[in-house]
Length: 248
Image (cartoon, rainbow, N blue to C red):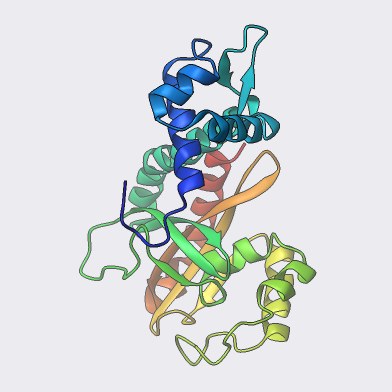
């Protein structure tokens, strides 16, 4: 248990039931679950009834409980998420060695980009972004290429209450119209650029990763502006190849 004031007892009870059913599939009825979890019978009835309607558990002809089909989709999503990160480290290590730059993986989290993994190339200048860190999506190539997968209506809704005055550099996009124009270009090109929009002196390029026909994440490479001017096109080519290896 926890003393967190935001703790929800009903969810905690459901968690106890699901864990027990997972440990003993097809072996426990309502009464056994009630005894083992110390949840009274009437409360257990409501918990199981709700979980069953949500397809989180199912009851067989002997009134024994099993995990339901909805749990399979959660497991599948979890496995795919970790498979993507593992695959990224393997494939991006090759890309990193070819372009001699750091490569990053991220996903969209609202109006922010969430960094998931990084293959860092050794050098005197290190990127400020680390796995778990978030940055405004519109200021990054990663964020823009992920936002471009949304419709203009979805983007407008996402930014309906956005604080546009919070800019990372003078080059950061400052209004919805400019953002949508930038995303239109990204959709046409299939990749996004950040030209000193997140950090002055740095440029970045990003391409999307698709799985099952949906954009799920993106990979990028950031570098000092003078290196961008000489190797940007080659970096784009290698990132597209990396994306192809990670997409399916």
